Length: 67
Image: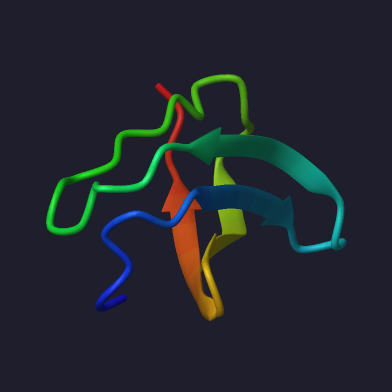
């Protein structure tokens, strides 16, 4: 995502059934800063990560591996 230095980031994670399993709003100014999510409560498997910042939207498939 580019040019969103002061936008609030809304981060959501969904399971493959479309159920929201994580949601968090973060302050802007985080461009080029890694974001760490504590997803340790989720079962191993594939999920969809959705990040919204201003008018921009990013959706990625992620894999969670539990110990």
